[in-house]
Amino acid sequence: MISGCHNTEVTKNIGKYMDRCDLCQRMKNHIETLTEKLIVNEVSERLWTYLTVDFITKLLLIAEKNVILVVYNRLSKITYFVATIEETFSQRVGMVV
Image (cartoon, rainbow, N blue to C red; front, side, top):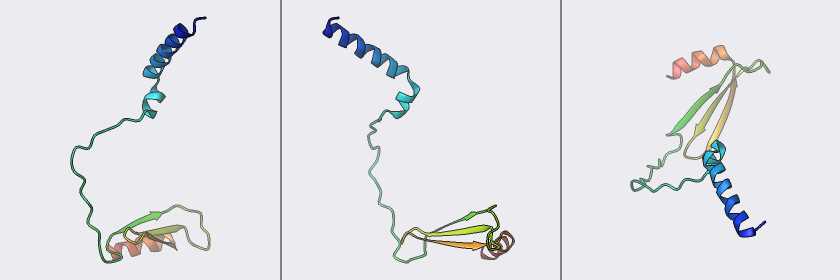
C-alpha cells in the first residue's frame, strides 16, 4: 500500500461521508457574521421590577400541597418557591391578575 495514495483516498472518503452524514452536519460549527451592532439591554435599578412567574402543577400531594409557584427576580437572580394547593393557587392568581 502506498501511503500517499492511501491517505488521499481515505481523506476523500471521510469528506464524502461527512457531507452526507446528518449528525456530522448538525454538529458542525457554523461561523456567522454579525448583521448589526449589539444593543445593550436596559438594566433596572429597582429590585422586583422584572419578574418571571411559573407554576409547576399536577404534583403528588405532599403535606397537602400539590402545586409549586416559582417567582424569579431577573435582576438579582433570586428565586422563590412557594408550595400551595391547586384550588387555592387558581383563586389567588385571579386576584393578582
